[in-house]
Image (cartoon, rainbow, N blue to C red; front, side):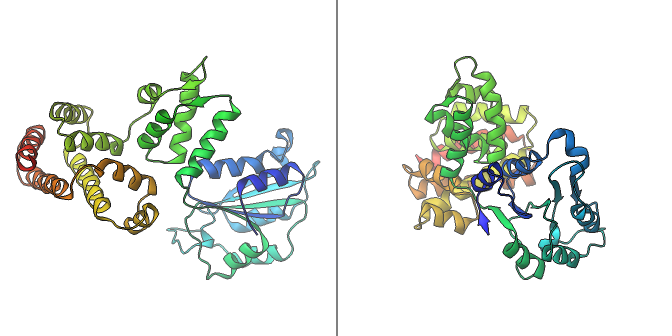
Length: 340
């Protein structure tokens, strides 16, 4: 049975708990939230006796199942969590332990009624050709965190802020999404810092996001590309200099710029929907949304000329000893000549 996180939360609150759960997904924040629901079932003073965790990359499945079959000590339930359940995938593990998935198949036939067994599978996909995977999906409560949409992330952030009586401006939220590249785990880390920064008013502004959020290279490149296509020469040169001063490798920075500009061209020429384009390009839909906003007022030919100059600059970086900052300044000047 496939459910969502809220359903599991409500079921646990009502005491309606299944014997086996399969939690699947790659988002660390959501996986942690799901995990904590089960950790909190066992009172803290009982956890040393009735709570166990087993990492399949380091421990035998048999040990976890032996624990799961044990009766709880001085409590109503036992919780056993199996981490990194790679046996449900096609993943190959170097120096892996000799695991026997058939033992879990046998356990699923007769699970211990007072034990809650949770398999944590931090993977996008499971191998549905395997007997064990099929059986688990049929006989467990399956929670799968798929690709989150922008609306999904907005709801999660809104729920977190509302629970703490905070507000965030639309521009601040948009900027936070951009800086974090729509990665939920990073967004929630930044939210925790912003809530402290916003005291006592409890109102998060765009300026607060700018001042506290840690920028990634992708976000800095986004700002840099925006300055380039708008021909804000002085600011573009200053930002490039700053990135180099901060220790950014010129070739890594150049690669990120070229990759980002290639995405702009692909989005500009795309005729499919936002979701369709994201699927074709293998990127998050939010990146497509931002790219469309960026290129909306610029003709394809203008963007293509800038891209070609970026490629030339990359070749010069790789084949000459010229100063990267000088090459960037020459690139900006050449862009101005070619496009204007």
